[in-house]
Length: 282
Image (cartoon, rainbow, N blue to C red; front, top):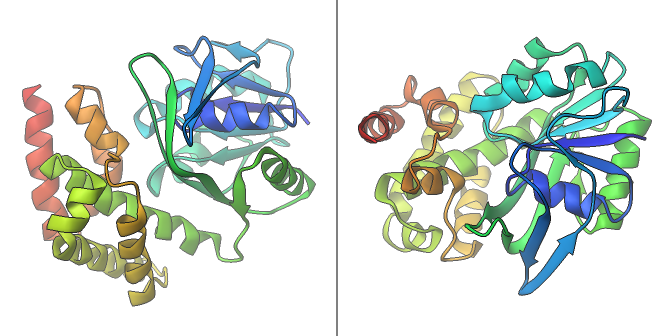
């Protein structure tokens, strides 16, 4: 099975590196020259094929997309000739909309997926992973996805294939949207948000649950409580990728993560408008 991972950031490089220990995988990335990962205090260098553009004659059975949503179209164009209707595309992106965007961009079969991980590329290009590695949730549809699940297991990546994948994706979005909003708005870490803004965090979670319910997704108070516990258990000094993008003056996923909710929540609209103004002033 030929596998490609598109995106060499904290998610893509990590997944590609881990999978390279148990199967053949290509990393498609413009900026990545090598992969060095710091995890649980240990630093390890990984050797695997890295291409800015995939080899012309290579066909991919499975493509894991781990880019930012705002460059999705550009990145997918790079592998357009390497996939077909029999290929599977697994997005491990933030938000709800990227899945539907991908379906419009390719004839390949796009399945639902999400990843829980706190990882960031450092100034020296090392990928630093905080916490307990990664947890991937995705749709199990055929032999290819079943094989991927076995690869994840062998590579030391936790994974689940829940029966209600739509709910699982919203559960991830519930957590990441609220944390990205508050860490970026206040420019504070996970631990500071948990200590100083937990009530506000809970109210944002409630708004997302209400929006999900309107869209037919059955989130409830149990999901709110789980997200709150997850925040409190997360590494205290960790920051969200959107927060880091704002700190570094980079293009962020503000529209995808927060803008998606702003039209249906006054609380998210307030945060979005403030961050949009900051973005415009950079």
